[in-house]
Amino acid sequence: MNTASTLPSKSPFHKYWVILSTRTQEDMSYRANYVFGAVFRFLPLVTLIFLWFAVYQARKAGGGGLSIQGMTFEDMITYNALMYIARGFSSVPGTTSDISKDIKDGLLNRYLIKPIDYLWYQVMYRLAHKLVFWYVALFTFPPIFFLMRHYFSHVPTVWEWGAFVFSLFIAFSIGMLFCFMIGTLAFWFLEISTFLFVVMMIEFFLSGQMIPLNILPAVLQPFLIHSPFGYEGYWPCMILMGKVAPDQLPQLLGVGLLWVGAFYLASQVMWKRGLKR
Image (cartoon, rainbow, N blue to C red):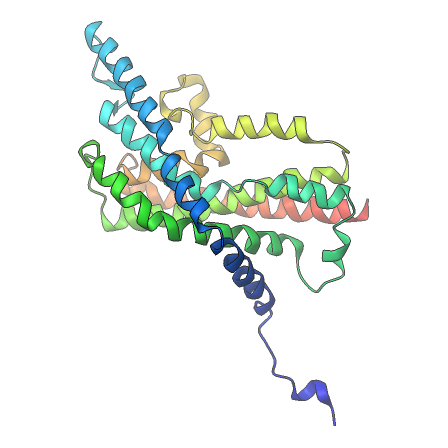
């Protein structure tokens, strides 16, 4: 009797579902850490409110306009508040260092001998963190946003909500693939910590987390608008704030998908060449 033929066949995705489920259960054991992290991550926003209030008051006293590149004071605070949602999807802390460590320390072998794709393993591993984080955020974020409700002047349409959710998928994909590519540089370089710091600071700036990209010098705008990193923070926020015209949303999201595809192909090339090395 053929035993293998009697075993129930499972979907190829089942093994990744097990990884996602197991990791989620592990993270749920430390959900108190997520609660404190979700609440206290808004503390820097208090500083930003006072900072931008001083900037706009100085402009008003100097006879300047009440907006900067179309961004009012309320828009600026709304933008920084929404950035916590956008970066909650695009940021995958620890991914690059974990991948480089697996490569340098020879720990990669334990994944290569298993019938799993290492990239998809990392995706499921990080996605579990996101699921637990947003499970906690559903209870901690709404009260904070309710207290800030007077800053939100735009009511998003159904189309804008849909585009925003889709942009968060793009944000996670670009953030994950970019970190994967940087991590695989360990195939060629023994130590990438310094390079990693520099690259992540550039990504932090180009994603618009520091300041909105549209208030930067005009000479940089063509590059910033088409940069993939803007999809990690800037564009999701601008979409939900109604700063992107409805007829431009399909093109904007289409370009984001093209960047996801380009990053995926680049990550596959680097991975295969790294394994050969």
